[in-house]
Image (cartoon, rainbow, N blue to C red; front, side):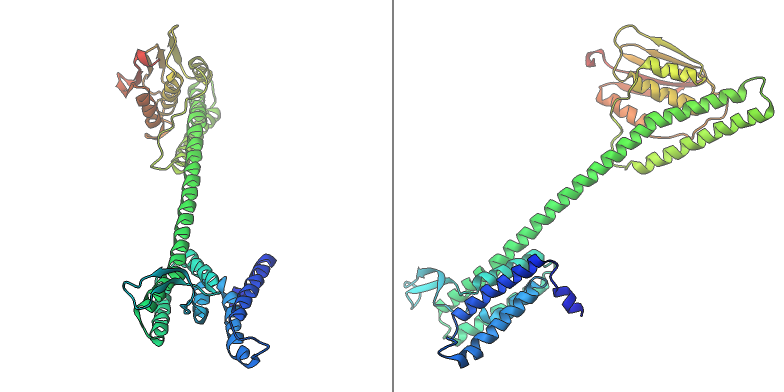
Length: 382
């Protein structure tokens, strides 16, 4: 039952294709055999078994082309009277004309199954063993016919042209398809990685910033006078929840990004004034010194990263933002409450890469009782 399930055709098209293949092969086999009318006994002894072999080869050839090659061995290129080409080698061989790549009526079918063997077989030893078997049959035929050098040349070229070359072509085709598939899968994997990096960047730049501002607002409520203990406790719980959400967001971003991913390089939407206004509305004590001259394109990214870090790591601290044509500074004072996030993350790494590509420098570190983020970009880059 398992054998029948394996040789069962998957579609009507395959059934029709194989029936036509068997009909053609059977006609060619019968055409070179005894006449069924004049010599029916010889036809039954010679041609009928060959047609049965051809039918068995077609039956199993779609699933196991190597088995089809073995079944078609008796119908191989062992007649050396006709060839793909004829070469005059009277200067070397007793026979004046030598057949190169001897052909029989079944040669195209044998070549087809040899091609399918190279196209579908993954192991090396089964085809190699079958080729040695076919070579042994060829040697036996040559020896039985006298074994002169002309026959050896014809048999060798027949093996190469009928079996080896189609097999190698099928093998080459399989390698090319595998390479094409691998290239497609690699492109799809790269596209998925880019999309994951984009999602991680968007989550960090927008959602991370908003969570930090929520934590700042909660911290301000927690310290506001006139609240009863229950309200203070609720504000503290909100601040802790925002901190936990920020940490989970950081973990999700780490899962979305791969170690090989570059830092996010896309610019951040919005302008400096809007970012500072939103931070002030959330309760952050913030001052802005914005130059009238054109500011660097990276200024919003620098300000957003600085404000986010100040909100997460120094909640309640006063923040100063200075933006000029060549310099962006975000400086915060000492924290007034417990930080809402753990150290580390991808924001500064991405910002550092943006600044590097723009030809600038980024420095971060303590400044007095607080922390300072400074980005300097040469004037010529704008």
